[in-house]
View (spheres, protein in one colour):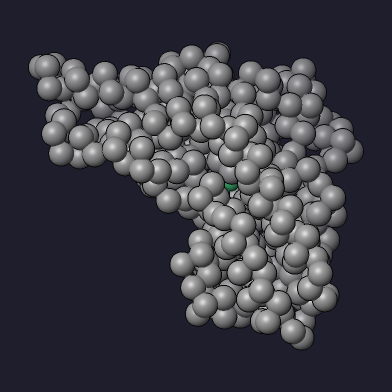
Length: 368
Ligand code: PLP
């Protein structure tokens, strides 16, 4: 298989697997137990917390481990207790959009932040946001479909000056660009392990100093009383190791991905009627979202699958229907063109040969 869907999930790094295996087998103790076997496991969690904290430049106490990015996003929005104003960008992951809509149904006021044709939040939108004066704003650092990177640090600084709490979903940015919590000027930040070659089912919410979190899960003292439940030890250890590797290899990985993406774009752009969405915006070095006029994205994905190539369509396939991507619609792209979208998201194990093979196949299927 040629796997080109790393924004969906990444394979587990061999070194990460090695690190987590003992915690599935030998060290099975409960980290809350007081005896040695438990303390040893507790200390592995502490190490993982340090490793994740180091990747984003915070102290370990600021990391709340969760079951993934989805839970961390929900937890970030759950900081709103009494009815208040909330704003989220129109291109957020469903794990922000849906809890935000739920809050609206519960009596909070919700504003959507629009993006321009490149998928970028504009300064005008931020100015309007400041006028609106919400309690909490959520804007993602990098988009999972287009790879577009927002100037979060710049915008968050302005919002914070107005005492607006800022959350960013950094799930797709982590491990691909430097993600330093303090430099981003945000108060809350979401991370996920399985996008950085860690295991599935583990993530974290990074919490700024002085920010109060309202726990969603109660009934245990874990994670500073903010996330009850016996820890997913092996997955947390894996997250720590994946974070350590991502920190060490960040520059090298990014350069490699950029070389592959350049090769991919140079080749695909010679295919007639092919458009790369958000091509002119700053984008993650691993992501290319494109469409070929007149060719349905989902159909193309299925055809490529038959040839052993895994890519994703831009549509909401999780819901089963061939609905156009709301991210592309928010960028002002019409529904017909949005339905052509196919996402290629590269990973550190991809090779130039795979890219060339993929483009060759695409060229054959891409005949209108
Ligand atoms: N946020 C973004 C931008 C994502 O791309 C994803 C996963 O696709 C998530 C959040 C959810 O993360 P998880 O799969 O760890 O729940």
